[in-house]
Length: 217
Figure 1 (cartoon, helix red, strand yellow):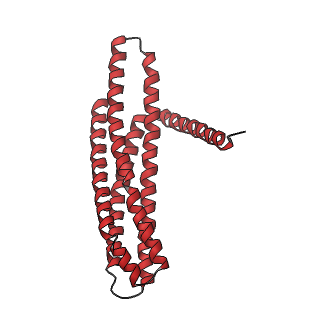
Figure 2 (cartoon, helix red, strand yellow):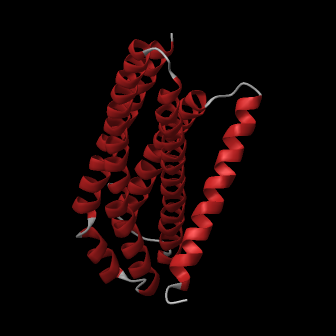
Figure 3 (cartoon, one colour):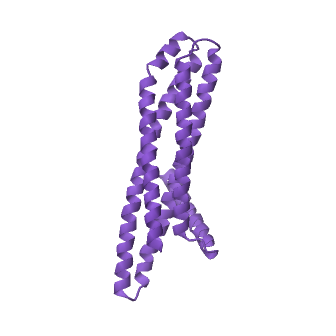
């Protein structure tokens, strides 16, 4: 019992894997295969990224409104900024969860594909399938890297929103607004980078899905 948390984490991982295997097995019995699930989940990531882009643009607009505050209740300005921060955190959580779901089914698909290579009796067909698997894995890894780049771009924006929302919460005065103004250029650059990275991930998803569809024809 030297590493109880490690043992617990391992047990949870094994249980999760078993649950996922049962889930995929149930879907396959009704004609829904891992290839289709993978495409659906990539589409779900795209949808979350598109929604996320709109949310982060909205948060940026609220931040800019806050730093240009010219009268009224600062408490209201804080509440609006904090509301945008909370919505941005939720958008980021959705993106991360959906990327993790893509990774889960992709690993299951490739493991199954690898295992089934041993079932071929034709060396030629086995080689063709093995080449196809390697090519699909390569394209998937490229897609995942692009998704992960966009995912990493979330943190700088969320950190700035959180820091400034917290600071404003405890400093409802003109000095706080002046401090926020110094962050304006940084958050603008971070949001711009995030939007570009998400655009790249969305385009990569479209390419992967199109190539995957051609492969299945």
